[in-house]
Image (cartoon, rainbow, N blue to C red; front, side, top):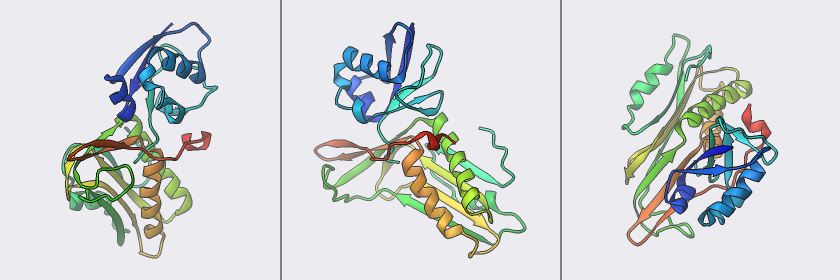
Length: 239
């Protein structure tokens, strides 16, 4: 059976391509697929033990069965469609600059009196171990189809925890972003400021950094480094 595997961020760089192919005999699980991948593409070996796997845009685990027609993606831990929600929402992965006023208007309803938002931007001095001391720009990459699904999941989690929150917006920019450019935007709306919007917006950005497949590369004068997280999803993260 022939399998096609999409690679992102560090794995893409190490393989020198964004897709690789494997021929395997059935039955195939994520565990056997990763073992074969390490043997066939040694350059990926150091990254695979901590890599995450998605099958058909859901997180997969060692015993997950895999078929040739499945959409398979492998990527490092996150650094960082139609919706039947009864509340206004806006989820996007985009190369374009953000119009935050326009996004706020998407959440506006007659019973909304408070909108709380978080805005992330590129900083020039990271001062973190292993990264360039001074950042020239960031390169953001996303597994876009899965990313927007996970954004919608975050909104559902917010409503479960803070039922008085109404609208939710989550936006991630990708591509090359310079110092001061907006990278991430999360907003939550409610009738009043004391109805969970502050906690919900904080939860939204924290959760985005855990389960939305987006990565950034810090580019400095002398080197560039993919920033990888440490959170490993569980079955509960596929809700």
